[in-house]
Length: 171
Image 1: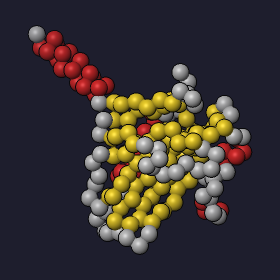
Image 2 (image 1 turned 90 degrees about the vertical axis):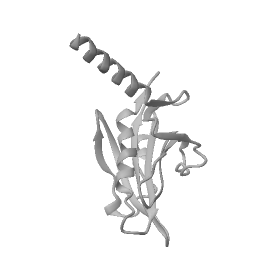
Image 3 (image 1 turned 45 degrees about the vertical axis):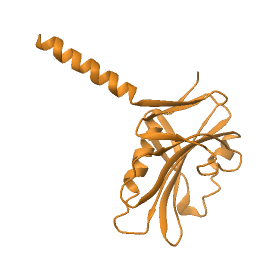
Image 4 (image 1 turned 30 degrees about the horizontal axis):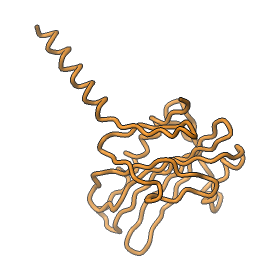
């Protein structure tokens, strides 16, 4: 009886965690990602504009923000281009901004990050790019917070960065 009860709890927990996952998939570029139900899909027009040569495909934002965080979102964009063009980040201003090679799961990305802000807010933005089959895919994550010692955008960016492990290509 105890084994059956334990198995039933495991099945219910597995079903609940699977149900808590949402999916995004773009048929044109055959790319998608999964995100938890604690995030919400948003319009790519309402999110950061995609870089030149890229088309905004899908975007999500955190529903619950940490203290002092004004917004936190991620956008997936893609564009047909050469590998060399994909490796060139328009936002890389000098040598210290040179893209880094990072790996999430089995996929290697080029990454660049910068601080974005004004007089009352400041945030971190990270661009990740991967080149596959003549297409450059860019996944941008970022969060903006008030200029205040308690405003921590780091954990929001970490939550969004985790979506890179769910990125998938193909049908």
